Amino acid sequence: MNRHSTRVKIAGTDLEISRLGLGTAPLGGMYTPVAEGEAEELIRFALAKGINFFDTAPFYGAGLSEIRLGHELRNAGMPYIIETKVGRVLNPAKHPNIAVFVEGIPGLEPVFDLSADGIKRSIEESLTRLDVDHIDIALIHDAEDHMDQAISEAYPVLDDLRRQGVIKGVGTGMNYCDKTIRFIHECDLNVVLIAGRYTLLDQEAEIALLPLALEKGISVLVGGVFNSGILANPSSEATYNYERVPTEILSKAELIKAFLAQRGVSLIAAAIQFPLQHPGVSAVLTGAKSRYELEVNIANFDQEIPSNIWSDLRAEGLIN
Image (cartoon, rainbow, N blue to C red):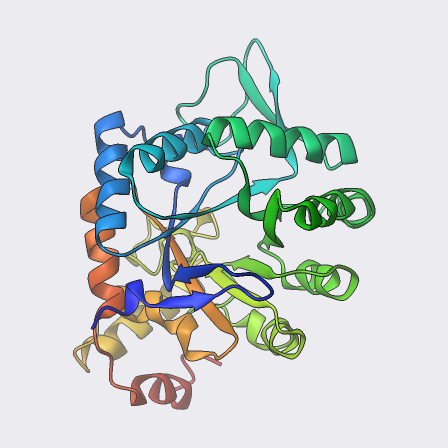
């Protein structure tokens, strides 16, 4: 079953995205460098397998991810949908701080700027780096510490660009349910990306965010399905929400893994498919730095899992 390439519509647009999208933070050198040849092979393989939805951001490698993605998609000669983000601009710096990225565009540093001018500049520069004439989906990125400005200054610019056709869909990309809910109440959004909050280890989004998005007719994308690593390979060296995994979280992940193994289901397959159990979730985003990693994600996304697994996990108290 090719679940990964099934198309779903983004609310209020003519965009139809693959149910499994490719996150391209790794193409910006997140934690480890990625060679140009590997990036090219990854993007071409994704398209060949029917994945048409690609997520990027200026933050990823100080523009490197956008440049690589734009170059490979332009040369691939196949239809695609790009989602990028606003909230940071890239400023010149002698000694750039590019966070968890080990490579990037030399001399540029991402800095927060959610002013109207900052958003206009961000979109213009992303159009150039991606070498496109419009942005399919633009998300306000990591704005939890800048909420008032994001709503009063950033959003109106994106809304105007949507009316002009420069952007087709507007949304948010965050790790926080409460902040995302505020955006939904105060802005007219097509889509929200919530990372790490609807997983086998954290179902916070199920409480209020997902029901609200369903009520408002907003598409929900789920990222961070492995909670930054622990659900891919539970161990004391793994990370949970980008920090060393707490003992109690590791224990729970190991219990879930053992429970699934007894029923012939891999933890990775369950983790990557879990968000789709909620009718409010449109698609899942996972990152990959190589063709092999994407092959593994596709295989696990398409694997048939008995429908009773989810209710059994709940009955055992392993998920809420």
